[in-house]
Amino acid sequence: MYSAHARNPFVDQHTRMSFEISIFTFLYSNFFKATDLLSDEVFLRCTRTWKKTIALLLGLLILGLTVSSASAAASVVHPIGSQANGNINVPPGVNPGIKPGDGIRPQVWWFFLGLIVLDFAAHWLLEHYVSPDVAAVYDAVSTLIEPEKVAEKLGVKGAKLGIKVISHDKVLIGLFKDNKVVKKFTYASKGIAEWVKEKLGEEYRLKIVEKYVVKDGGLKDGKDFDEIAGTLKKLKEEEKMITNINAIRLIVDRGWDVKKLERVLSDAKSVNNGGKDLVSSINRELKEYATGKRKDLGGHLYEAEIVSHLKRSGWEVEEVGRQVMTSSGKTEIDIIANQGSETVLIECKRGFDGIDTRQITRQAEYAKSHGIKKIKIYYARGPSYPPFYTLQELREIESKYNIEISLVYRTSNFN
Image (cartoon, rainbow, N blue to C red; front, top):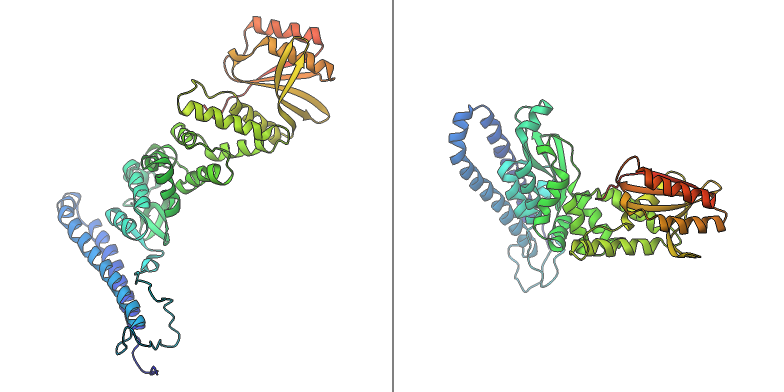
């Protein structure tokens, strides 16, 4: 039987570990408080020596915590006086959850929850207790950020770059002073950072930080690493709207707004007639452009942007990509939409020079035969006021088929 007055080795080790982490926190925080009192010249001379010494001390302290946790687990599994292959009397209320054959894996991350770690020690803690990939994200931020300028802009002198441990696999990267967050830059989690490395490549951890997270050395607000990379992962693996990994890399290389892209693709895909085919065409064009098989992005992504714009402006998009036959030949109508009770045919062109009056003529013939009175032509690049000869040709088509044709200049978010 286990005596109620016997010492519980697990509790003893827990107490010891709590004491050690208190020492760790005290030494670390007071080291930086002490350096604030030094002149810049003295600080620079001392830092060269102190950094190595403090890093060693911190490493030994955390190593001690690891050994302590392992010892605690071992003491629970094999209490003093018991045999390894004999029956084990487990103290009441202690359930180590270790099955035969399980190894002892020290788990001390929960001691760091809420802990703020600054400067060089942050990388060490991330590398050893969260993930080397999260450490790489932190390094990317520290490479691009200018803490002194950001602190000066905020009016918080002496703020330092560091991390706050949110969970065993997630941290907040930001500027801290007096154990308080003064500027949030981004969250970074193990699963997302590892996905970026495995699917996109190691260099894309830095690229995402550079394109999205750190703007103007941190002086401007950027976006969140987890949100950006998480949306890319969602687009590829969950919603399957961008299926080619080279297309995903292209999105990052161009720095496209991934949340806006997700919204545009979702709106396009939701069109009952032709929506899924439109998204498939976007995938094909992005893949071909990313791999050098085509010289331009194609027009389908811009078409999806117009679909999204119309839907969010109160229009009902009836169909996209309808193939029609007229007396002068076959053509495609990009979008058929309803504004209230009125049906409108919509043509989408990335560049003004892509407008083909022969195609518009066929669309006008189709419109007249179906009682449709309006055609809108959206274009993303070119003159804000079209040249006279183009307008003249369009006016002639209007007159011949008794319809209204209008040009709408609307830029693209994805170039």
